[in-house]
Amino acid sequence: MEQKEAKKWFLKCIAILTLALLFFGFSVFFVDPYFHYHKPYSFLSYRLHEERYINDGISRHFDYDAVITGTSMSQNFKTSEMDAYFGTRSVKEPFPGAGYKELAENLDRTLTRNPNVKVVLWTLDYNGLLRDGQWQQYESYPTYLYDNNPFNDVSYLFNKSILYHGVLPNISMTLSGEASTTMDEYSSWERETGLVPILATYHRDEVDLNVTTSFGEEEAKTVTDTIASNILRVVNKYPDVTFYIFYPPYSICYWDARNLNGTISKELQAEQRATELLLECPNVKLYNFFDQYDIICNLDYYCDDAHYNAQVNSLILKWISEDTGRVTKENYLEKLQAEREFFLNYDYESIYQ
Image 1 (cartoon, rainbow, N blue to C red):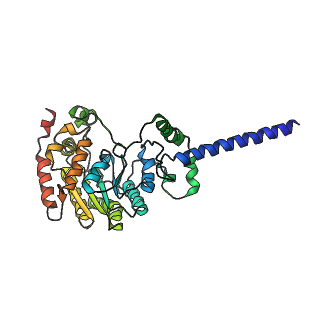
Image 2: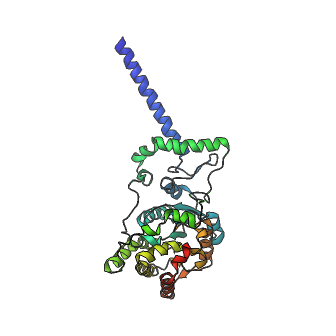
């Protein structure tokens, strides 16, 4: 009799556990906080966050014909401004801290899934030109969200973190009447800007002086391989898409560090090699804003030596829409020479007086 009761108790526990797991999995499937299965429901509010979890879902299920992508330098773009300037229906897919490889792989998936995309705005981080093309900052990714394998979706459907950080906040927002995060707000930030916050993270006496300052065959090969295996691979695969690619305008403090360790000429040579490769692509429109001295020398726009605030993102969209800063085969050497003269001869000590 006791054995029979124990068996009933065991089966009852298994049934309860199974029902709980099914309810758990169905909740994640129904709310789908990272849009793995479906587009947002109109009756639910969604918190857009955790870019490496949600960007792939945006690619899969949102309605759009243009994409803004890049590192943290793209976070403060507003899709509403993009659409006003270019007549598009855009989405934003930033990847803070990403290397070229991660951005290219995501964009490749995006363009494969949505053949209606005609415009891509892509930040090409200057400090990545001399990195290995396979470099990436993060070791682990939610790859179960990126593929079409239904079996590894158990990592999504039965993930406690996704329930706590995805499903429950969305339900809470819905019940409280809070609106969904807009695409303009998604991934954007506001931080204190100016020399004081910049000097909290940028220390002149800690600049690495033990670096290679020459640009030789090895460096040229690195730039070529990095651009070809990532940027050119995607650009050439989608010839009907127009790629607006730009070098983000880092602050004068970024160039101060390069002046201290003697790598300005090396970086400009890397830029020249990358530029020459990109200008061979007829569907690329390349832009450089390092001659916008009113911006790069005004530290009130920057929270550190590289990251500008949303005002600069808005200006970049305006400049590109007006074709300001366009780099062509006819002017790229002249623009490079102007950069070289300005950054090699700038009075960097005046920044700190």
